[in-house]
Length: 80
Image 1 (spheres, rainbow, N blue to C red):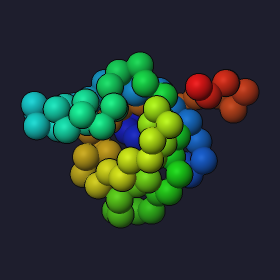
Image 2: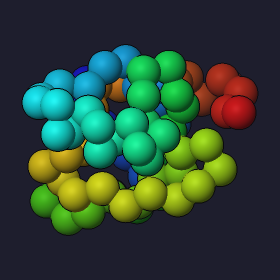
Image 3: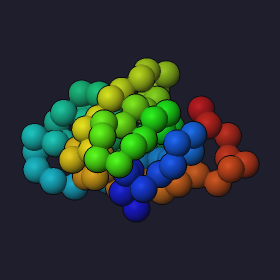
Image 4: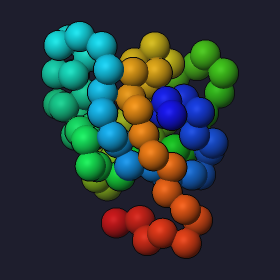
């Protein structure tokens, strides 16, 4: 599922990044790479998302967040 489908407060693991080299490089520089857990702090329709990635807060535009394919973690999963 796309990162934009994850609700506020939920956690997910990045599976892959779709789109061109520009998107992948930008996200890699922010620490968003396959295998990395993320937590959605703020999410609103078509507005930027606020995430926690490796103990940092990151703001992503909706168009970029749509290119991040994730797997939502179960509620009981430990978030590191």
